[in-house]
Length: 58
Image (tube, rainbow, N blue to C red):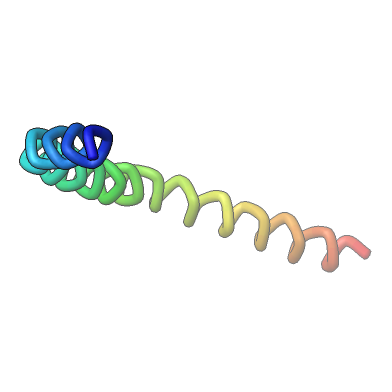
């Protein structure tokens, strides 16, 4: 019984913090994806151009 009560109290105390953390994590992941999308597109384009050039040279 004691364990359940302690777990309940900790869950109640950390609920708003957990929600804030989840919101921050989602915003952080979105900002990361938006920041790295151009780099990813550039890398894909670079790989495609190198493949096309290699095939043309052969």
